[in-house]
Length: 329
Ligand code: NAI
Image (cartoon, rainbow, N blue to C red; front, top):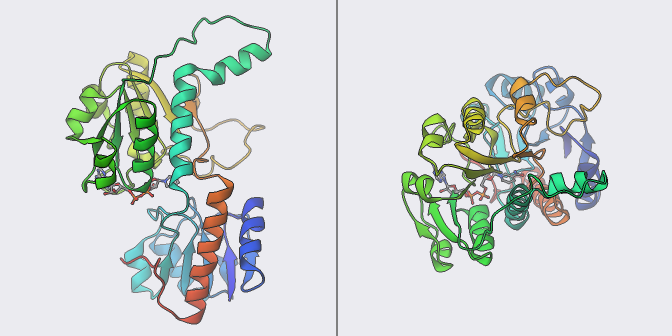
């Protein structure tokens, strides 16, 4: 089957190409799927999309007119696809529900450790011949309280890592995960989690209910000086509110792997350009803010698993078989 792969990076070519082993005709396109790039899908029954590709109702309509019948997402989150519109247009949507929850959880832990012990600043400082400790004071994670919001596959891994550091884990989810209880996590209300946690880490999906879960009100209810980690989705956090809380000191530190307005910025080399996003530019001025470019998933194991599942999904779609990873509207 001919498949147009949007937002293709060198690692997509390498890993999808290897997993495919010539089964499907993969056509790699660097551009993101947008209204203006949608015609690139002409002549292909399937497209393969990633997190910044837009599959809203209008673009899905264009794809349907071009003959696209299948969308294979090479990610877990699907907030960028209008599933109801896809169903109306007869377009199947499949995804990769799990690849390496460990890799994402480990990145969240790496962000926390870096931010707390300021290793990102120490690295640059020591290489510049400055061996002062000023501004590098951290805290022991041992015996601290870590709040985990969303305790599915990734949140449960993160909770286990934090238990390994000797932390008390408070959890909040709409569905309790017995694994988290087994390792000593305690389910509490969101209010209690905010009030008691020294560290809050977000691992829930982006839905209408979770958009701006962290707003000015939530930040005011947090323990003063808390650390906030977001490896979920950018819009879980109201960026303006978080900047306000950093300026007042109510929020002690912030690590983001995802950002509300990351599309068109994250995954691009903009080092020779002027950053147009004033909120992102402001965030990058704080010494207690650490931003990575949506890379939590980016381990060899995860990329290989994503490629293998995606090709398996495409095999099912091409053969007209039911696919276990199909999404329902
Ligand atoms: P999962 O589906 O296993 O777990 C999500 C959990 O969030 C579920 O237990 C669900 O009940 C819970 N949840 C849903 N609504 C909630 C609410 N209103 N309040 C609290 N909890 C709620 O998903 P998984 O694999 O653990 O991934 C979580 C999220 O991480 C994904 O939706 C995705 O947005 C993000 N992600 C980020 C990556 C990155 O590279 N930064 C990579 C992979 C996923």
